[in-house]
Image (cartoon, rainbow, N blue to C red; front, side, top):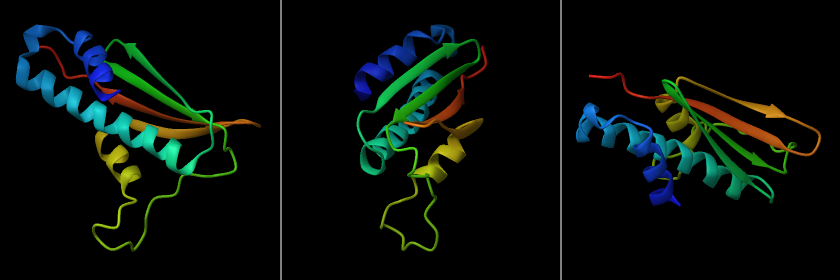
Length: 118
């Protein structure tokens, strides 16, 4: 999945940005998507779904699962190396993020900014 997502993201960026800029942007976005999807699989309930919106200047990522009763909670006072810091990674690498709840599902969303042109 990471490879396919990375290829999709890469094709939405102009090559004129340069390989380093494109690689950094794609790597950061893939990390966000990986954290969001793994959280849905670990802490949510099936079915889960991933949607990536390619918009001017940003990617919008929405991960849905069938556990509206299980609220995403950041790790607090957890020893280093014990995991659970995915929400902090998402916060650090996105312009905005949040959760939308419906009766039978929750949608965790994030906005990842694309790099500016040359």
